[in-house]
Image 1 (tube, protein in one colour):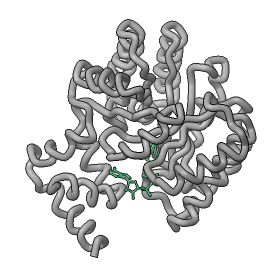
Image 2 (cartoon, helix red, strand yellow):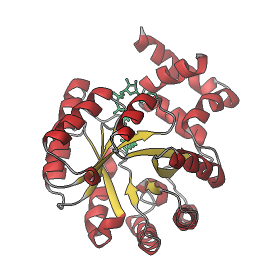
Image 3 (cartoon, rainbow, N blue to C red):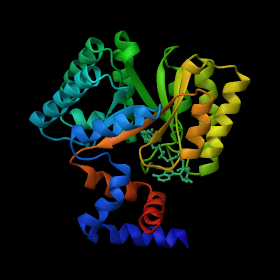
Length: 298
Ligand SMILES: Cc1cc2nc3c(=O)[nH]c(=O)nc-3n(C[C@H](O)[C@H](O)[C@H](O)COP(=O)(O)OP(=O)(O)OC[C@H]3O[C@@H](n4cnc5c(N)ncnc54)[C@H](O)[C@@H]3O)c2cc1C
């Protein structure tokens, strides 16, 4: 039933008027301008939530634009410090030039890392589809001199991830997520139970290597099982945090975590590309359409 509904929504969504899409996108996107996004961050900070800001967009094909986006992120890093926000940034390689050339991407990421060092900030490189996995890992490993300012993401659905995490430097900083792109069966686990099993296995491997883990999931079972693992291994609270997407209703569990003084970080996307982001998320993860429709008619 939900399968058919999801398929139907995917077919219909491109013809839904933009102002209607905006109604449900507003829940998941923190506005169009940096000022709007900063206001959301301030509100979340007041509720003891850490944040990471993401300017929506990917696959930049224009050189000038890729530099402009990198400059915008640098300004954000500067203003986060100026406004004393508890917030870091998340960037996508293809947003800051990896589709144009490796050199452009390298230059943009280096500029960002310099800003990050100067303003004592932190950059997390989001993990995009598998065409970019090698480049993203290489970028992380080539910039270990910025280690305290740089983190990477690993996807539990990729079969290669166990090996990738095992090869990581001790004390690395990762976000662990299930993975959102449609990858082929030859490289990705397709069964959701197997992905969940792998997620917890990878979490254990990372924690045993003293790696900082951002446990990025809304899956309550995974959250509680992660807590069991953390407690059984007596992991210090400064070696992990939970991460969730802005707008996903997780109030009850967030309250429980905060009560135990466990850090929670909210991923806050914003920007003029809110429409493309919303549509793509719906297409890439059909389940999201279910949540959106539920929220729309609540
Ligand atoms: C902070 C953060 C950063 C991420 N970064 C990346 C990245 O860099 N690369 C990447 O490939 N993927 C990334 N993801 C996406 C991730 O890989 C998953 O695709 C996504 O989080 C859904 O998986 P889940 O772990 O929440 O579990 P699921 O099994 O998909 O969901 C568990 C439950 O959470 C709820 N839920 C999940 N999503 C939503 C939603 N949008 N709205 C309402 N309820 C929802 C539902 O109740 C669902 O039953 C990120 C996710 C988070 C939370």
